[in-house]
Every structure is written in structure tokens, then in C-alpha cells.
Image (cartoon, rainbow, N blue to C red; front, top):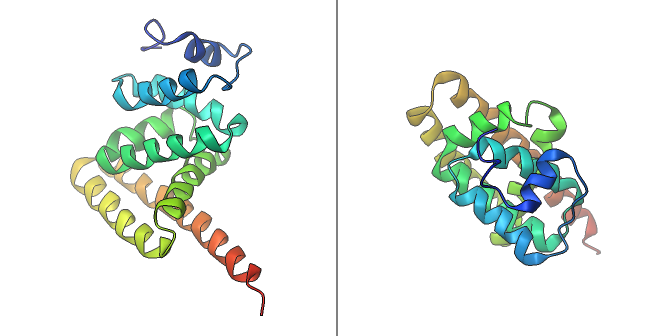
Length: 163
């Protein structure tokens, strides 16, 4: 897959299914940085998706920010790569959308739902104008899942309020 030859040892280990860990913060953050800067989106989508289940908060937050920003900046690339490289299962879709929802909840603690609606409208607008029809239709599914995550968290928060 394109990107493998120039990838870090950590990225190659993850891609090869070898033993790996995210305990070296510099290596873990460099992996996210490579996703943001590389033209080899397909490779990094596949690699990063494998890291989500084993990630801690220190890694998950910048990963969420990276995918949040990337979906807004380049929805066609994210939606295409996601479906072709790991988001074709519900678990993959849930992992990516959970990371984005987490970022919205962190960054917009005062009103995450309003922030999500604004973000979703912009992603949808860009997808409709920049992507082919099939890719643009994926935006709806992606955004729907993000909304479900946010609603679930907001519902749990309302249950936590004591009288």
C-alpha cells in the first residue's frame, strides 16, 4: 500500500499486524501528524483505525481533533478512505465517529449539540459541492453516527444531575 515505505517503524508495525504500543508519546503523536500531512491517506486511515481500541485519552484527543479537522477540510478524502480502508464495518464507522464526537464534546462543552449542527451543516455542504454523489451520501451516515454519540453522552449527563 502506498505510504508503507516512508512510514515510521510504529506505523509499519501496526500495518503488518505486529506487536506495537502507543506508550512513546512522541511516536504516537508523530503517527497522527503523518496522517494530517501525508498524501497517503488510505494507508494512515487503515493504520489509525487499528490504534483506536488500544488508545488512551492522551492519544485519543489529538486523534479526534485530527479526524474532526480533516473531515471538515477534505470531506471527500475522509469519506472515501474511510469506506475503503476500515469504515466498511459498523465497528469502524463507530470508532471514527466516536473520536469526532469526543472532540466536539471537549471543544464545545457549553453547547456541543449546537456546535455539532454547525459542523455537520458545513461538512454536508462541502461534501455536496466537492464530492461525487456516492461519497456525499456517506456524509449523512457519518454525521448521523456522530449525532448518536453526542446525544448518548448528553443523555447520560442529564441522568447524572442530582436533585
